[in-house]
Length: 389
Image (tube, rainbow, N blue to C red; front, side, top):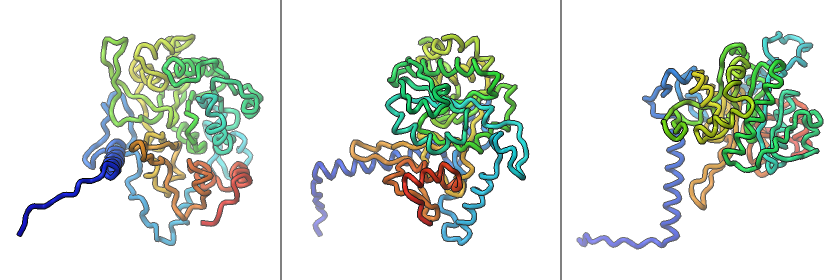
C-alpha cells in the first residue's frame, strides 16, 4: 500500500477564507469567555471596589431558546410585558388607578445623552421615536453643533446643549463634553436626585430604569452602572504610578447619586474634571470611574440588566427582554471581509419589523415592551404595521 499521501496546495483565496472563519470563531469564543467566564469562575470583584449583586455572568443562566416549542411561550412573553406596562415611573401617571405612589420618578433624574452632530439623524432620531418620549423633561442632549430642528424636540432648545466642544473622539473633546455635562447638572442639582449619562446608541427601558434607582438612596454615595470588562482597569496616573479601579461604561448608561455628585465638586467642578482626565490620559467614563472609585473610594455597583454594545446582545433570552434596563447594538469585526451584527436575536414568536428597516432591532424591542404606546403607534405609521407573530 502506498502510504505517501499527497496534499493539494490550497489557493490563496481559500486560505484567506479559512483564516477569516477561524478568526471569526475565535472572536465569538473570546466574547463568551469575556462576558461569561468559565463555569468555575465567580465574580472577580476585588471586593473593595465593586459591588456585584450576583455572580459575574451578565445574562441569566437559562439556555437560549428553552421551551421554544411550549404553547405557553407566547403567554410567558406577554406576562412580563404586561407587568412592565403597569409600573408607575412618572408623576404624570399618579392619577391612574391601581398604581401606588413611589419615592422616585423619572422627573427626578437628570439623564444626559452624549452625542455628536454627525449622529443626530442616524442615532438621535431613533431615540426620539422610542424611549426619549417616556423620559419627559429629564433628557438633555449634549452635542457639538447647532441643530434647530432637533433642539425643538428638547424644550425649544432649553435641554439641547451645544457644548462648543470638538466633534472628534479624542480625549480632550470627550472630556470637554463631560465637563459641560457635570457643570450643567450641578447648576440644577436641587431639581434632580440623580446624575445619569448615556451614549447615543443605547436604548433605556425607562420604567425599569426608575425601578432600579428607587432601590438606592440619592442622599448617600452611589456610583451605579456596568463595567465593560470582567477585570479591574489599570492606568498610569500622571505617567508615574500604576493605579487600578472599576469604571462603568457609558454605553450601558451610568448614574451618580446627588450626594456623590456634591462630593465630586472640588475634583470636578469649574474645569477640574478635564484635569482628572489628563491625569490618567483617559476620557469620560474612565475618568468618572477614576474620580468616584479610586479618588473617592466609592464602589461601583454593577447592574446585570444594563448592557452596552461591547456585550453579545444576541445572547439575551427573549423571555428576559422585559427585565432589561438598557441595551445597545453595534458590530463585531471578525476580519476585513466578515462583520457580525451585534444586536438582539428576535424570536419568531415576537412581532417584528424586517431587519432591513430595523437593523438595530430597537424599534422591534420598543414595540414589544410597549405595544400600546403612542410612540409604537407612530413607529408603525412610519415603518408599517407589525405583522402577527
